[in-house]
Length: 158
Length: 393
Image (cartoon, rainbow over the protein chains, first blue to last red):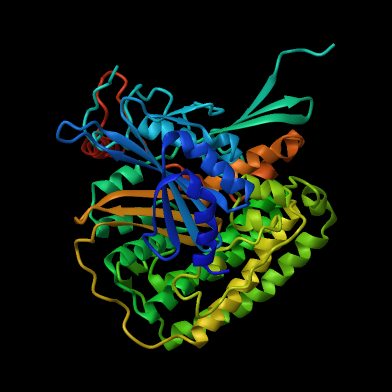
């Protein structure tokens, strides 16, 4: 099966859950979902045995021109040569998502990284322990947010 | 009478199984492991953040330094991603050389692992021999690129090392020599009784488990999961010189040995084929300094499995975001689940069985002086190093 055909399958599965879909490259499909549709979309993919969770990318959109900052989580699912990215965006004030560990148990490590690096709150995740940062890393400082600049003294936020 | 109290055996963070830092906590009931957890980050260096603050060209060198063992695949994944964003394709000869070095790197990495894993099993003779023979490919890599580690072959838009006739002959001779030795190792690990007792049926991961936990690379293939980026989505020169997928259905430690050793034969075959059909032509294509805005995903097969790069450009000279997901991280998730139910004494072998690479999954360090509230900056650290060595010397 070619990557395009594989992605057509994926498109059918996630169609009911997505707000918007786009195909940035021939072997890729991006599906944008709202936070409450994240788990149903991933569950549907898993039930159909479509691919495995390869990585989760966090993106930071800092506040600009009076608009609130946002965080985006990208769930990359891979099947053979095709990559489906399920994207979900949450505001700084409520950076909450359901943990995807109920669907993909091995996501725990990725979620720990997402929480400590970006400040996502993942409800129902099995472990909120630090994975990569040191135990005495200040609370509320998220190194992969754009506001964090390495080499500068960081303000501890309360 | 059963007790509610749990007995936890900490392993690490110093040298838990191999000579790298990681911390594991195994909850045991007698000799049997009932729960396992992992803590990483002891060699985290903040490379993803660092990449956002540097230009694409600087980043190429930065990513190459994520891992000293599989440095070449990191640079290849990044270069391929950035080239795709820029709409530039590296010349065929450059692609062939990328694949060639990647396979040589795979040989060195698998042989390094073979030695480490043998050592964990108490088979130090095999450890010494496999590392001695690994020097053959290390010498070839040095002759080829000038470096034993961090070969620095890639450029954005191509490569900077070329193969001439004498180097070609040298590599082919080395491969002949290695092939004989690898056959010997395959015989040893599949027939030595004491060694089989440590590997056969130990750490078994079923195909369903490997699939569910998202295992990648030889760890997944040893459980019968047909997953190899070189086959599924050929990059560099793998569409011209295809790789045969090597799997094993058994899913135990022995299978992981057999799969990796068979991959060594396959790597040798691919190296010979590339050298036989090396296309003529340029080594580099012109790359723009500013990379057009966009996002791309670049996947390559590192010695340990699928290496995943997500590159986002904002149209400038520095990337907006680069996400690196290394194969060891996937395999940790799977091995921690598989560990449950096994004997504590088998843990070092099971841990080493996935060929973990800590540098891969750890990428930041921040230091604070005891007497101060300030984080040490790069300049502070550099100054500290200079003063420290002034005192010592």
